[in-house]
Image 1 (cartoon, one colour):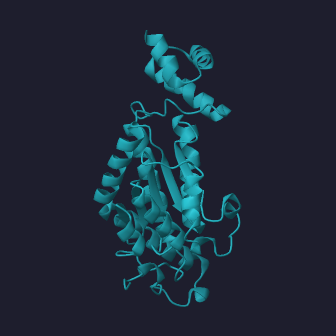
Image 2: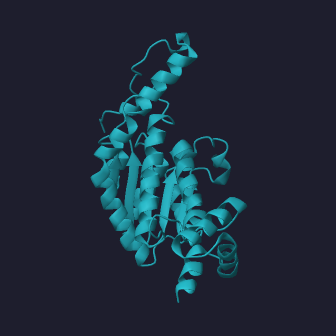
Image 3: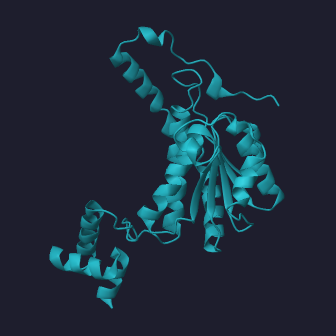
Length: 270
């Protein structure tokens, strides 16, 4: 299949080793500024995938991210932050990386080229037609991810993707593709840079908008967040104080008794 892999095209900059630190930082920053504009062009695609994901999760489904290398790690980061931020069960949003958990820290040789393993990994999570699987691959050519989505399609599981190359095999496989064309990287082929930034932005948008649609935010506050450290407890007390007429001490007591901002506020108002 012939398509233009812009993530692999030569950098717009030459002789990087001859640049000063200031020049390097300025030029990297200039390239990074283009990423949100590229994401903006993909908003209709993101909206379609979010809407379908909300529909499935409201019916009891789960969300899975699958990827390799940087892309897989980004999916794991996003998934792991949903429970503490929104108070949802750990199994609701899941990140799976080619090569297993050891690949989170160190590259696992040839893991991304294994076309059978993604479906095995998903079956280990008892994947079903109630779920949504989003494949993440900057190049759009990662065999692990593409084959995983192909098997999901065969089993009537909703598939989406986040990639940075138009017309890539991954974009053509996913039923709800998101394609953010960021162009050549500052360091040629280093897709952990602009492509990785684009993927992180899109993941933020997906998980945050899904959780808001599921009722996990009230006003603009994370009322279901887990109170796992002193900073979050303090934030929770202040949220309570902004919702009901109590002082800090009373808010702290309410939070301790009820265990969440939402429950504290709702019970006070009864």
